[in-house]
Amino acid sequence: NPNWDDTFQEGDVFTAEPGLYGPELKAGIRLEQNYRVVADGIQRLTTHPLELTIE
Image (cartoon, rainbow, N blue to C red; front, side):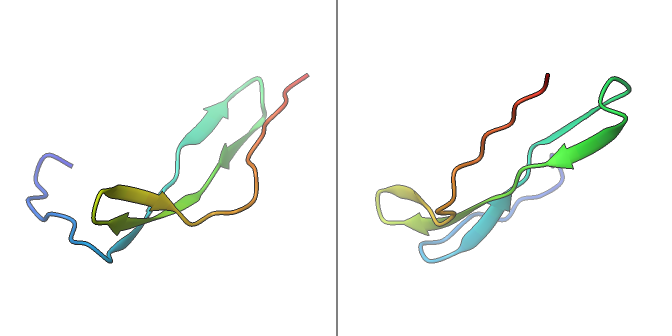
């Protein structure tokens, strides 16, 4: 968001939710990953694998 001037601090937790939508799917899906800000970057908290197969 270009209007957001906050910064993440160590210990903050955030979610990244990329989405996939389209008429060929006849639906939409969002794949959520949770992360924690740590001293040297980020740590992924989501432990299950995310895989999507479209046939």
